[in-house]
Image 1 (cartoon, one colour):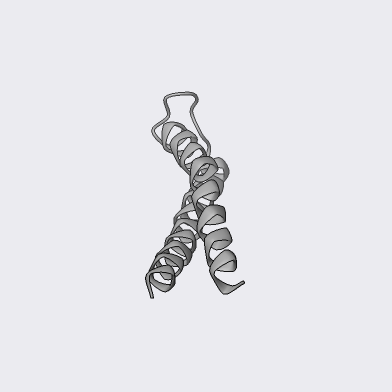
Image 2: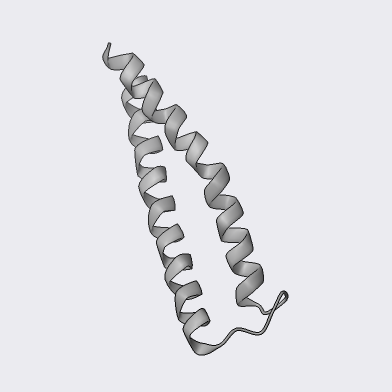
Length: 73
């Protein structure tokens, strides 16, 4: 049972990476003004989005690392 739970966590963390990568890519494009000129409020919102994505990426990475380590044990 424990092994299945760890495998599920590993699968979930993997599945979260794809949408995070897309969000990060779009935010990067927007922040370099390739799609539009952003006003101050939009830049602040975009900065907040980018920080949140980075934070979530770290959480996903920690989950993944922990599951991989525990599966090997």
